[in-house]
Length: 438
Ligand code: EPU
Image 1 (cartoon, protein in one colour):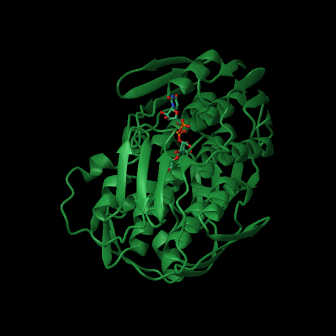
Image 2 (image 1 turned 90 degrees about the vertical axis):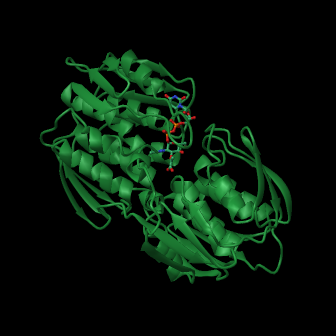
């Protein structure tokens, strides 16, 4: 996928989801791993990179930096023989995760210039932890309202980086910067997400010395040089979780293949509590739910890994509109991640929000209507709600979904959903402006 389509998704509810699906590679693992290719002049080969708009954009940014990028389906080959330090504003600004280039570009070129990520729909999303960490490693960093400029002409050195909170891309940035730094870097209060662990595996395959990923203390001993390698990106637990929630909500019988079962422990236990039949072995999950028996409401609070992932909060909330009774869903990580709520209410859901808590009372008979997808995960939540609704739902700004889910409409249609793309017929003022930061 090269471009983000300015179109709608039309979903007619009522059909269950039946069949099997192979989980795609993780978007959030692919982005830092692609950035890591900047740390060697040799070629790296990445398998299982999902064909989503965000990985396409990362490839475009790397190409603009001088990296030779070849893509064939899920295989991406990157060769960073010569690299510029300046991320073009018009590209970097379109994806908040481009901040993960800071550590790698600075290491490779001694100077990095990036558009500054701002706030977005789901929260203010500051990056001061990234900057503090890199400063501790010797970087000279200037910030303006629109740009971050970092310099380390003599290279970076190891440091103790103590995060106030376990930021995911912040942890990844410091790991990327530390791999070739002089001496030892210790990250305290590190993020433990599966994609942080995958980045460590990839860096080690390139010759780095990273230990402790998956715990809150990561130790990186800088090496003098790194080399090319081949790596298979982990399957996406967020995509797998989204489909598990979709079948629980719409009803049906779904087998997820190449599923990251361990990373979904929290979600699978919530589904079980709600009355959904869940069976799993090491890499396969079967989810069954007949809509003849009502779902039970189950409270949930998001938390950093291994807690319930914030990225599954919106799809989970959509599911809970179908449970018989009341529950509270709390968003611990982001201060404004209930953008899907007004859209779900428009479809007939009974939800009220107070601060970081959403109170859901179900079951609601949802009715199809026109809704707007405010971000990737809210878009997925609206699709799930639409699968349960009577009549047709038209989801505007559906390009959000394409940023994080590989061919979601095609995959759902393959499972029996009635879903199709259509042209945007409604003027959406500020569409370009909205296509920034996530
Ligand atoms: N934060 C700070 N200061 C910082 C960094 C973070 O205050 O310097 C705060 C943020 O404002 C937020 C919290 O810490 O309230 C967590 O932010 P984090 O830095 O962990 O998030 P991120 O690295 O920007 C990644 C994912 C998000 C996912 C979050 C939380 C990628 C590319 N993005 O973002 O994924 O929601 O971690 O797990 O890995 C998505 O895929 O749809 C998505 C938004």
